[in-house]
Length: 255
Length: 255
DNA sequence: AGGCACTCGTGCACACGTTCACAAAGCTGG
DNA sequence: CCAGCTTTGTGAACGTGTGCACGAGTGCCT
Ligand SMILES: NC(=O)c1ccc[n+]([C@@H]2O[C@H](COP(=O)([O-])OP(=O)(O)OC[C@H]3O[C@@H](n4cnc5c(N)ncnc54)[C@H](O)[C@@H]3O)[C@@H](O)[C@H]2O)c1
Ligand SMILES: NC(=O)c1ccc[n+]([C@@H]2O[C@H](COP(=O)([O-])OP(=O)(O)OC[C@H]3O[C@@H](n4cnc5c(N)ncnc54)[C@H](O)[C@@H]3O)[C@@H](O)[C@H]2O)c1
Image 1 (spheres, chains in turn cyan, purple, green, yellow):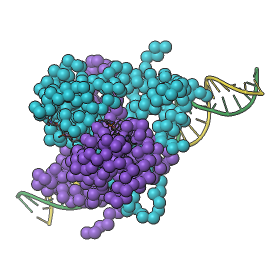
Image 2 (cartoon, helix red, strand yellow):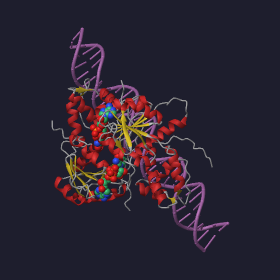
Image 3 (cartoon, rainbow over the protein chains, first blue to last red):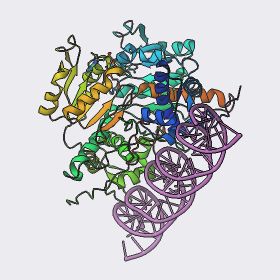
Image 4 (cartoon, each protein chain N blue to C red):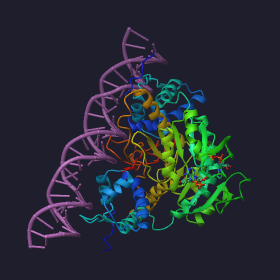
């Protein structure tokens, strides 16, 4: 049984989809569904069935031909591959609008990412309690990261302070950063950075809206953009890089 | 001069990067920089210079060999291509934690996406004012969308209500949706949906953290994942689809 | 036991995206 | 006006991601 995971490298596009499969499978498990076919999973996830099978095949996971995949087993495998077998505490830098929303959102802890701490520079913010966590001064960042063994940091400061926040996080020992500020952070190559930029999302939507209007006012929205977006890719080892693709189009079978 | 934009189709990956170039260029413009080379822009954006040039070439934009690109002209061209020559009012569904943070965030209006309205089902929320906008009942959604000519809707409701919110938005006449709820929305093919899923982002980071720990505790984080993510791609016209890649890794030249 | 319906796993072809490398084009200084 | 330097624009090679099509197991029914 201890079929040691062959440690294959999983394509980044697949890694980006696994969390979605995981959520769907977890929901199915709650509804007592024991087995699921790639077709059904594809339908729920709004993807191609072949893609689902290929993605799952990277897990080395065994489905059963003629039957499908055992939900519980898949959930276990995906969680294992994503490193969700234990919690990953996160620390939030910036207790403003966004930091508060994040802290007040229970979804993180539930999904294995408890908020180990929130820090801010503003003395007025320090001491207040958000989502059960007391805001502490940013000088305590290192202490929090060290004592709580935090690997993931979230940047929720104003744009101007984001680079500083990132540097402090790196210095404190964090190795992954989720950045909400609309700037390209400059950090050592070994640090994994992901970015969530709402303005970029809206501008991409704007592009399509504009296009829709221009292309031809008649021809009813032809194909209609559908399909899956390439995952948050990761390119070669080439030195620096930065701009990241972001959210993507979605659509499940409305069957 | 009125070199009518040849209306080339711009690759989705490029569309996802244009907003970032735009932000960088706008900053440069403020600093009175008049001209910029693809090398410099690449450095600031953390991308490959060749990619920058290729991306910009889709705009039909003219750089000057031996010199670079005229910042102001590029800003104009990108804004034009992204449809940012006029405002795109957005309507937010769900005035909870997230909806409040979004409404209270001035960055949208500044960037051309004024909040035309916020709606909620909870009578207790209706009437309160967020970021200068009064929360209205969801039954008024159509009226808001129609009168303010809203094309873009934001779903910030609990997961369970997201599909319903999306359907209401579509019925009201919205054609693009930005979804924050962790579910795959089912909407007509002609509607453009983009998704921002924080849990997915964190899980991707978790995957890399886990990998880092497993692969080899010694070998210092070799290449370190860097590079650009594929843009929020859009695949073939094939029927349904759904899971979308999301944020991506970033890193500018820290030179 | 045999046949049949179903579903996985994957080879293959194609589409898309990235990067290199270089000719063409423009500027500057003599 | 030419030589030399800079930087663009793009063809071509390469790498990644997608989707089809089909062989190969598996379970069920007769
Ligand atoms: N609020 C939103 O809905 C929203 C949406 C999209 C993007 N963003 C981005 O998220 C970031 C935060 O937005 P916000 O609305 O929460 O801003 P905010 O101004 O409400 O909060 C920022 C917080 O960061 C703190 N801060 C400032 N400098 C700091 C530093 N060096 N170290 C630590 N903390 C510091 C401030 O004291 C403040 O509490 C911004 O970059 C913004 O562009 C926010
Ligand atoms: N808060 C965060 O930081 C955060 C982070 C990640 C994801 N999300 C996601 O964003 C969504 C909203 O999160 P939140 O924290 O703001 O939740 P919330 O519970 O604070 O707010 C949800 C709001 O939506 C309203 N609502 C419920 N059903 C509705 C309906 N059918 N139509 C219109 N409005 C309706 C509720 O009255 C409430 O005001 C959730 O799906 C959540 O998973 C939030």
